[in-house]
Image (cartoon, rainbow, N blue to C red; front, side, top):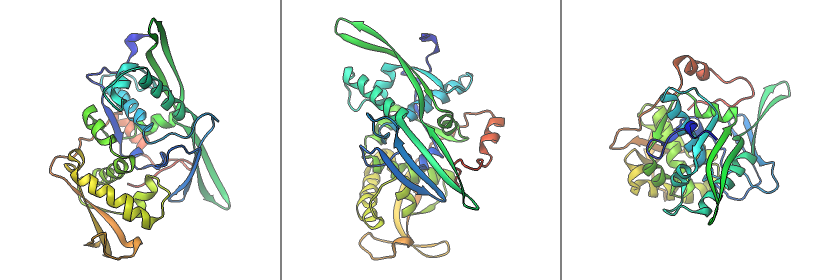
Length: 323
């Protein structure tokens, strides 16, 4: 592997999120699943593993995609050609994604395990076109990966990784708008329980899409985008309530968004609610307000002509959405 082709260094490589992928229900909350089915608008989404030795990708596995998106953004801003072939130093990845401060063989093995799950995960979308016709689209996150190993007296060491993400994943990662997250802040956010991280992320994405103006989000909209299989009533009283309490005291989250539970009383009209108050579940929303610090800066990582092309409505059979 050409060491000069590595994208980023431990000093420059940040994570990246984008407004589109932040809202998509591609990583179920429950761990160990081989198949998951959910709906989004008029789309049916089926997530499955085509490898009998691997389950579908988890929210923790998605951290690798955030890191790869950051590498792509760094390369483009440095004047490189946009590419879905990413070479990255393994120690950089391990240090960025490690669950603790130790860096050893188990952490390297965990990276390859996560890559195998991402490579095995297949997402199939189905959209009705009318006249009893449906269109299906299948894609996966990673097409291939390879690594250089060196045998040392203390055991085998992985020197470098080259990962080829799929064309669909590359489109998600380079879609119009996004923002970079420092490694410290990314660790702080994603060390929270995945449902807390996802609720924060979904609310932040909607606030960014609304240019910082207050936005009220139906609670079922949030539930279906985690996604989580619990009934709406249980989601409201357990997952949502716990997440809102955790976000309020988390310094990295609360500085950007302030959340409250409200009930819709009419078109565009909302009243503050307590979780103990009774109200129709379909009327309950989460009000998202801007916190005390500026919102993360949005960055465009494609040329303006490319930005216009990917900003056009998606062709039939692919997922498009309004955020």
